Structures are given as C-alpha cells and as structure tokens.
Length: 373
Image (cartoon, rainbow, N blue to C red; front, side, top):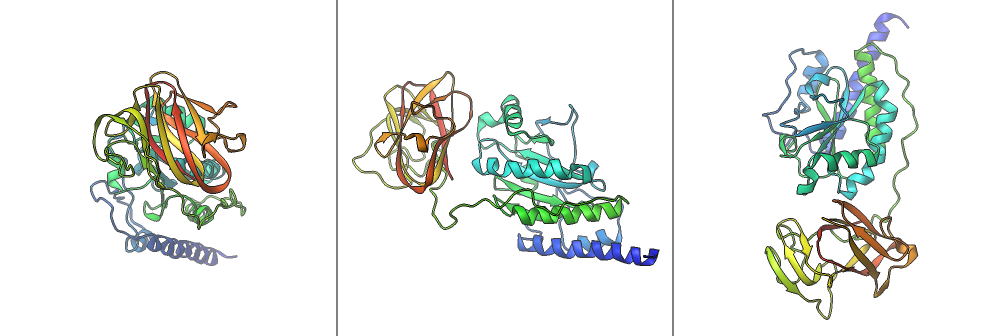
C-alpha cells in the first residue's frame, strides 16, 4: 500500500472511531451536566480534535485530591496524560458492592491494555466517613488487587467537577482529551471493551505505534435474573433511613425499639437499645436485633465496631444453613464485625424472598447499609 493510501486508511480509522464513540456517548446522555470550572483545555488543536469539539465535552481535571495510591508517592493529573494515553476514569467507593462486581473487569483491562496506552484512574469518592481514611482505602486497594492509580476524592471535588451522582460510573477519555463514553453502574463490559480497543487503535495511529489488539473479551457477561425485583439499598443512619417503619425515620438519638408482630417487605426493623446517628445505627447492648424481609440471592451489610462484635445470622426463623452462608459467616453461622467494610452475609443458591435476622451479641457495632445482589 502506498503512502497516500496509508494516510487515507488512518484518517478513515480515526473518523470511524469518532462516529462509533459519538453514538455511544450521545446514547449515554451527551454533553450535559459537566462543570466547566475544571475543564481541561489543550492548546494544540488538530483537525480531528476540532471535529470532536462539536460532539463531546472535554475531560475534567482531578480537583483537590486528599491522597494518591499506586503512584509511587507522586501526584498525577489528567492533563499530563492527554495526548499520551487513553484514560478510563472510574468513580467508586470500597464498600459499594456494585463497584466490587465491576472491579475484576477493570483489573483485567488494565493488565491487558496498559502496555497499549490505557491508563485507568480510580476516583475513590467516599459514601461513608470511614471511607475517607487513607489506610482503609489502601487496604481495600490491596485486597482487590488494584494496580492502577487511585485518587482519594474525600471532599467530592472531582465528583462535583464531573457532576456525578453514581457509584460506579465510568468515563472514557480519548487521546485528544474528550469524554467519548459515559456508563453508569455495572454491565456493558463488552461494549466498553470494544470502545477501549477502538480508542487505543486511534492512539496508536496518532503516536506512530503498532499494537496488536486481542479480539477476545476480558470476561463473559455476568448471568443473573434481570427481571427479578431485588430489594433496594437500605440505610440505617437518620439522613437516609426512609425504609424504616419504626418511629426513627429521619431522627437521630437513642431509642428503645421492639419488633412488630408482622413485617413488611424491604423495610428495616430494629430491636433493643440503639443510638441513631446521621450515617449509622449503633447497637448499645447485647440483646439487639435487626430484621428485614428481602428479595435477592446475596445480602451484604456495611458495618464496623471498635472491638470485635459477634453476630448470629438467622434466615426464615432458623440458623443460617451452610448452603446460604456468605464469605464472612463461619461454620457456626456467626460473623465477627470489627473493621470498617462491607460484610458478605448471605449467598443463597438462587434468588428468592426470605426473612433475615441479625442477632447482635454485644454492644458497640455500627451498621450503615444493607445491599443486595
């Protein structure tokens, strides 16, 4: 092939990448909602960047970071990598089960494509106060096998720059610094990976590199019952405890509570003496219980305690069966709560409706949220 044909082929590849990613981006909501204050402007314009300017918003910078992990002690910016890398921004928080389910794909993409110019930056924006702690986040990064850079976004600076409201959320930034893809939540792994490949091919043409993109996907789509109505995330703290039927909705303070005679679905019930704070409910004695009728296969709870607190897990009026035990429940049907994290309580054989009861054996444990899968 002669040089003019090579040039035309390169331009065709770039134009195709622009068109395809435009379809993805416009389908995901287009240019709306991004803060202009942190917008990254690049002085060097190209014909393709001028064309993209009409379709996509420019990337936003990291704003007021509280710390960095996996950066060899150095700070990083988005701007310094534009023109060099394809960048995937992932908003996450370590106690979020949806983020945890997304993590294997991010790890696989980074391992596979970093050599071809992919940079993943995890923006850790905390949902709970304990998730602001550097050591807690570092432990979660190590536990999850994350090798790419992580930025602590404790005051929601970067979150606000992107006008984000969701965990997890992924943005893809091309070599020219434009946000060409935006995905909220789990799934769309095949779609995301295909666009990563196209953007890396565009980058390779731009920087005169040759890459061999693997055609196989990083993982198969997760199979699960998409039509089954899972129980919603349920919070214990007064700021968001609208799913309680007891007289503590939106109220902080100390309460003596009793289980009702009948329970409603997707409603949080507490028994015993509890201290309700804006983020959590703290069990004050050893005769406290939590009750909840849920619809799901898996159940998780975000909790912590200053010292180890034993909790017995009962389901449908019986000690939890071995076949339904989550990873944090021992052979005796008990779990120990101490460190601030997400605990895996239930892993049933299939999705269904059950009554879950947590029997707390001593005071001091704080409970933040139930999540379901």
